[in-house]
Length: 146
Image (cartoon, rainbow, N blue to C red; front, side, top):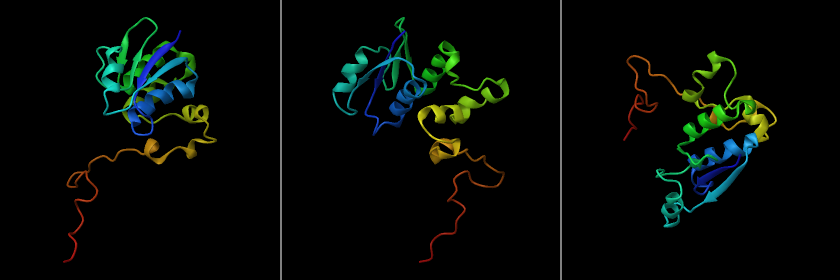
């Protein structure tokens, strides 16, 4: 069972990087097709991944095209439960797609020695808005003195 994955440049497209990391970290077989973003290469590549209009896009061995990183993760998790992409415990699994926080198993398989070695952006929890306070952290500051 081999998948096809259309991605942009992993250095400039974090969405493409996320799609590719799923396959790489869990050792799933994939044939990667790359295209430079903002060039004519991308539309030509995506012609083979209809109805996808953006990257990443995955084609299953049966020919079904799945778009978006989270949808790809959910599809792979349902097809490969042994890879443990999502936590086994239902209480931990329910909010996992919302948090989009990879589990320690993910980082261990990705090569990190501990879960604390994960990038800050991937482990950050989003703030909840408190009554009477702005959700943007800098709007409550006093203006600069002139």
